[in-house]
Image (tube, rainbow, N blue to C red):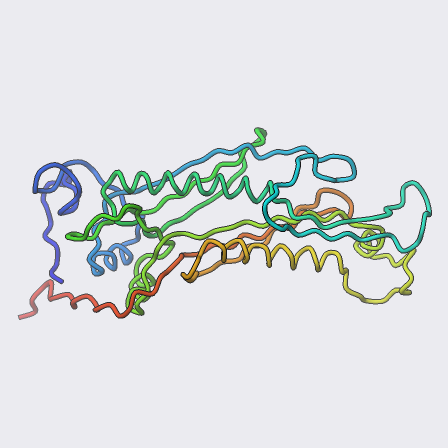
Length: 303
């Protein structure tokens, strides 16, 4: 690979950028890559075209009915996780929690998937408008707009193209860039897209869970001591399992590379929690051995 020439006109875009005519089009271009990642991008034969991004703003509020039961109907069409616990003591007072439950909040998962997916598609639309083959170095974030009951999804990355290759119907996307992307391609895998899923499990603690979380063994038959809080363990385990299942459903025969797991919990009341797990990574596909790029030549002669 030869060192690219330096254009004295800083308003010119990189050689071969999509535009009218055979020469480079005029206009500024933007890259979200670091200098090492930018160099690795060029070494792979990809040219940056610009920064592509997508934004979606979703309503992020719902009503909760009596005793924490969801007021919105649960979506149908697939099995969802739920467990119920009953009080072992019998009736001991109107304020006593006679039952508790863990419940998968499919409407939360669906709203998150809609917001993330909408922002993701808008980023790909911008990349497609640039004539890109894909988007590398993707970063994403979700933040709640203060006081408005809404959530904002933002996804962005650097759109790139491979000169001489046909433009795909849908650009690929990857969190990877630089040497990590180079190493992936060297092993025979190519990025296909982003896979991400959020799971959400609501836990309403029954009497025993309430006492255990308070550090008390009163009203239990076990007699005290260190013991697992079964309902919490089951809720957190279900959140992790569901997130993995949701991502696996997106992959088909592909694999997930660079997977990250983030766990969140929100206390909604005494002994009442929402446990969530976010799993995301780059969807990759094995295509066989790929010839390594040519080694770069000398930039400055030492003779």
